Image 1 (tube, one colour):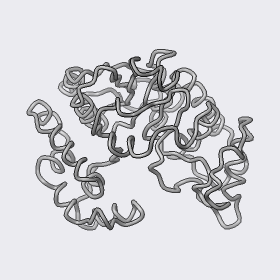
Image 2: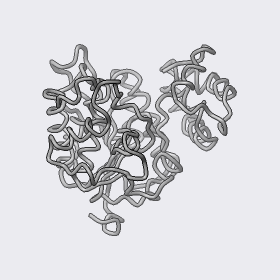
Image 3: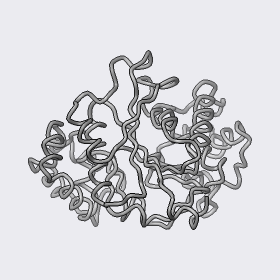
Image 4: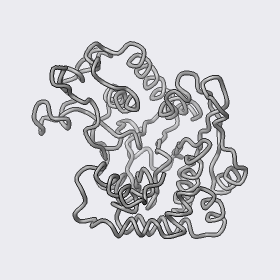
Length: 333
């Protein structure tokens, strides 16, 4: 599907929600999406079903949360964890793709995302997938006598018969992490969830169950999905940039991660949207059941966090922001 051909087609938006924090984040996501008043995008909330890979029932437990999600336009669909479950919950985003209709374009978002403006502003090219570039060089972690970036990444591309050289960004020097295709999995999209999901799962299981020897020094927990995602996108003809910059992870969406980070570092527009969409009583009544949301949004702790930082002069690394919030006793998630 080309950008021109996608103009009128319904697009499925997928998030994953389960018991605990993610169910409240899903309410916030749904409320922010509905606030944009668009009919073209259909929200589907994938919910893991109970099964042997979960130690306890992972479903959304509060009936009021489920009812509000449906009232906000969400279609809640169960899926079975066949490979990951509690041992690797990040695998939900891989297995949840099964709930989507085959052959229909989709956009996956992490649940801890806020929609700031109509998604129709984004000229998705569903033939050319990409994912979030809002990331740091978290993987691989290079050891003194271990394989470097090139050797590590090339081993993965070779495993799946992919062209490694064409994935490189030659604007960055050899052995610098940004030279190599690497995404945050906070969003990704494609023209068919089955094609994307089958490849994602095949690659993830291969790397998990039989990692190349070059990965001997590397942790795959919690990084497995982000290690495999670039390979999937490259294999399906995607690239680093197939969208105009500044829309997703910018003017249209914000992957805030946790509320203390949102208040610490995001633009005033993000806080404005957050407080607008959480103000109605039907939203407030549900969200304040979760302590972090109650304290951060409704009791003013978020504004105290915001006062600790200059958005024009933030620490370069996220960990430094986290550490300062924790030192002040305001960290919650």
